[in-house]
Length: 445
Image (cartoon, rainbow, N blue to C red):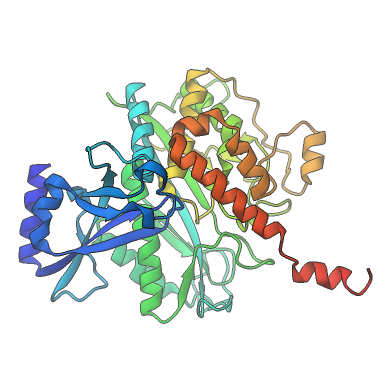
């Protein structure tokens, strides 16, 4: 740690850095920041810098007033979109109470706790998210920039320069990118980050969102991670590839002798069973907005039913088999999360569910390789005995509220805050009379 701190101080001097932004997130996953001059950094490393927690969404109760922000020197990066003379850098912070304890409402701490739980069981946790987003002319509407589709490389892909600049900026900030391409929707895009351990990846996702928006602004357009911005176009997801690895080496999900032919170990199968069991309870975290449930509907490409497969992309969990004999490539893909989720809380919930599946030795139901359930209504799925994700935010919040596991994982403060805040959102939404209702009812009732 001292070596990393010294590197930060030397880099600040050599790169003409005059301000360092301290980044952290609120419970909903919104980036927060304050600027520090370089002379304050040594104090910040040793003692932290105080902020007023009562101003932050989700920071409340007896802990709300005094919070200390401790910068993580391993996250230091000079911001490439700011001038290089009188440059600006950033570090991501962990939050603590005045007596030095982890701050209970810090989303980063929630994920750290679950990563430690995995380590105590002998595992590390790697994730690789695929984040989708739209470019619009501005933030006042949904006028798109192009009419391209999947993987288009023509003049239809108007935003290829934006993607290129975004990828280059991410790499300048030490965030490796695996793929970038045009998605299915008009002006919809995807940039996939290279697999990494969960805490670093959650930091990277927050940085990714900031970079996408900053580069869009630089080009005079607007980037949105809204789950379902247009009714007749695909929603924006955050498919999360994930695996456990043994701390002493090897992929805990891989078994070349899997009798089912999926290359999955017993650990992986228990993990998937845990995800399927607890997905309805953690759906509030992976899909936290009313608009999120406009994406999770019958007939869409986003999954609504609790099943798994390798070939069938309509299932909640998929086992990618691009390289079936590769231990390093063995993983699962959770397809329900959307791009507006708080990555710290979402990754923590997924990991907790999978680890609980391992601890409980949950049996894994047979895969669904052939039946396409995506066009079936939820009632039709239930009639077939197939479990489903919550249909609305209102349903999701009640499942989350009653979840013992989610209360343990999030802690009392975050759990109680999310239940109150999301119930309030749902109640406010229910009180609105929509144009849809007026169009269909006003003239006939």
